[in-house]
Length: 271
Image (cartoon, rainbow, N blue to C red; front, side, top):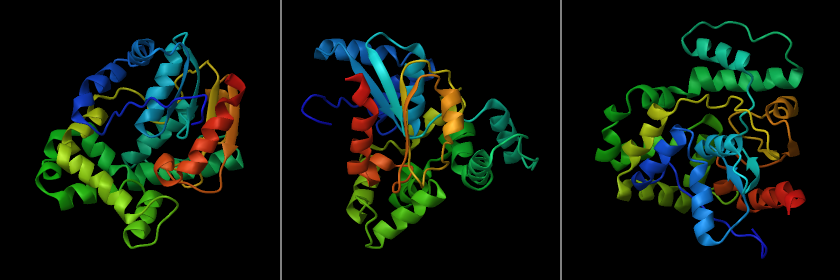
């Protein structure tokens, strides 16, 4: 990020070679991996950052709180209260019940975003959670793989469609999209990456119980905009919270400059 910090990255869902890392994560032991790795590389202190599945990994690392881990940052905050998660899960099955009582206007808006995703956009996730090995078309057809990957969530799909049509959105261009798809196709990891959903035992967006210093960046076209009220309850030591004007679920991919600036601001007090 700057001359005084290094970026050491682990890929989780992109490569079949990392299936071992996935299982460590799903056993809530992934937090041990960075400590071992960073000791070998000469680091005695580090911070963790994640979005998408990386957000869940980062939260669980922070729950374990190895002494080398100074703090964490997430751009997909795990803040959804348990009673909200239960209601949303019931709605997936067609219950269609009302939201929990006592939500503020901002929390109600977030609930509606989540309810839209759970009832209209999570079908791909349910398939991977229940029957990932039936997705053989991902290994058989590059068009099938592209269709599956591009249609992630409504806002990201719209941005990706614009980029592919020749209208870049931030850093997101047609070549960026094709590069990402090609990476999965050439490594034949479309199906193996789906197994992470099947093996997961944690609430995707739920509270994990993080106690160490935590920072949250809210990008406007994320699947849901985490309310500050929920963030303060989910992260008892919240040191940074910011809402941005641009960016989607794949913030680091689409808005790398904004994303990097957020990390610098979030971790400044831990330097």
